[in-house]
Image (cartoon, helix red, strand yellow):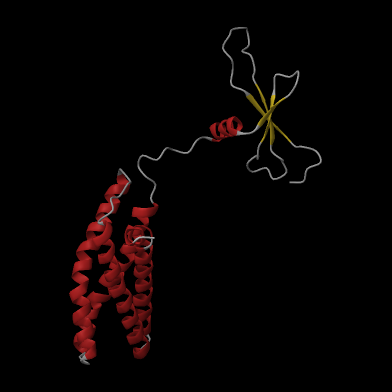
Length: 220
């Protein structure tokens, strides 16, 4: 696997995992400090800082190798995506100096100043990490705008019949198709497809009839 393939196929998921982990660590650190557990809070925040730093390095690597990725959705989904992306990018630029100043204040034991700025740093950091995961999900797991709509149940059955292995029944104007009947575990899945002539005469043929029936001697 080439570096470009890694950047396309692995790094986006890795980045989302790092963002999600960072969000969980920041949230856990907030709970710890509310419980006056200073050591746990410090360890969790340093771990969150490590995750965010690893994310930044991975993100810059991916951007240098493959560039940006366009959102394939449309309509309201695209508007929502752009709003989330814009707020994420703006706050991601803001959170870096906030984190550094907050960290320096804590390392120098200037805890009153640390607490004052941390009230802004923590929610911004949490928002950036969570929206990073949301952006990933919308970019890589949102249905494409040009993706065809799912076929109806009847159309799906007709397509299944057309693609199934069929057996002509001698002397009959019917075809036996071996299929799996959706939602019917007791049905082995055989269907009769019988072309039916229009009532009242005429040459136009009607759609084939589809008749499910259980096959004897077969367990579901």
